[in-house]
Image 1 (cartoon, rainbow, N blue to C red):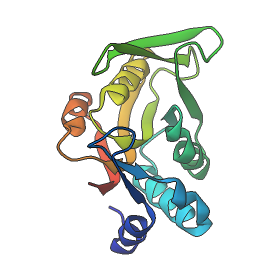
Image 2 (cartoon, rainbow, N blue to C red):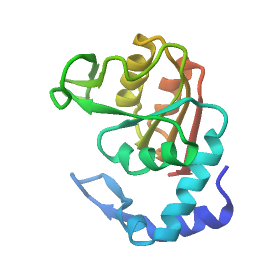
Image 3 (cartoon, rainbow, N blue to C red):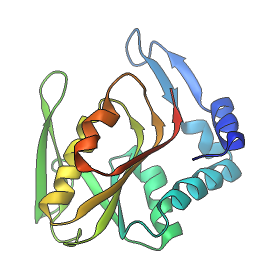
Amino acid sequence: MASAELIKKLEETIENIPDFPIPGIQFKDISPIFLDPKLYEDVIADLAANSKGKIDAVCGIESRGYLFGIAIAVALEVPFILIRKAGKLPPPIISEKYDLEYGSAIIETREGQIKPGQRVLIHDDLLATGGTTEAAAKLVEKQGATVSQFSFLIGLKGLNGDEKLKKFGAEVYHVLEY
């Protein structure tokens, strides 16, 4: 669990933008974290410490999952694997379709980059309803690997994202919860 000091600093740094991108949404702008290299290092240290010895690879979800996911992988000296929106990666690819509030979307990863038997951390910046993360976990499982952990900078309470991920039997970690 993140230290009280790290949580306090993040809460002071992350900006709450009301009514963005639509009225009624309270957008959590994480971009000010990147203006403070020491704070960024502290976040990576916390996320990496939570996964040390428990994973063999990190999958980051496009695009904000890359902001921390790559650094977590480097800190743990494990591979980083891209999970992208459909049509962004060259073949061969593995795809997973998932439902959105209105319609559906597809995410993909390159076939063969996730190895059978690997213990995988799936990282993204924010956990809301969990739909995209659930699809990412299915991509991992399609390739014979196991989702060992999910990590997020922020978890939004009340949207049931944690509940959706329980079926994978993996640890779910967020540095902050709102």
